[in-house]
Amino acid sequence: MPLSIGDSSIVVDRRLLAVASGALVALAVGRSAALAQTATPAGSWSFTDDLDVVIERPTRPERIVAYLPLAAGLWNFGIRPIAVYGTTRRPGGSPEGMAGAVDLDAVVSLGEAYGELDLERLVALQPDLVVNDRWFSEPDV
Image 1 (cartoon, one colour):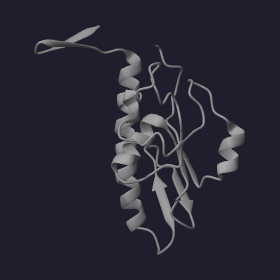
Image 2 (cartoon, one colour; image 1 turned 90 degrees about the vertical axis):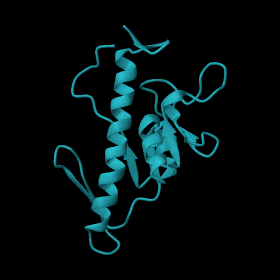
Image 3 (cartoon, helix red, strand yellow; image 1 turned 90 degrees about the horizontal axis):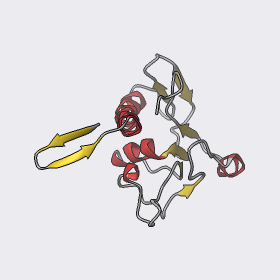
């Protein structure tokens, strides 16, 4: 359904809304992670998600892999994932909009299509943390 703003029209579909929601979650994750880091003993790291599940590590994660729209949110907070998954470029070669400011030439792409993830490359990268969103049920797209 089109949404008119001034003289231009923007087409909003469920997929776009899902991506926007994911980006907002990423922003909250970045802010919450920064807060959680200051509340832990020196050298340790913890994160509490929106379901009150706590993840604890003996050190702050440095090697991060993230789903592209979430990587974009992390990137805005100065957190630079080493790899991403999700469509990074449009058919013409320009960066996908949900990539935000992520330097696509500086990160490894682990999968370009929805549901595609090169698990062997993921394991070979030895990430400290993998950041992903979660669907409680199949999206209606």
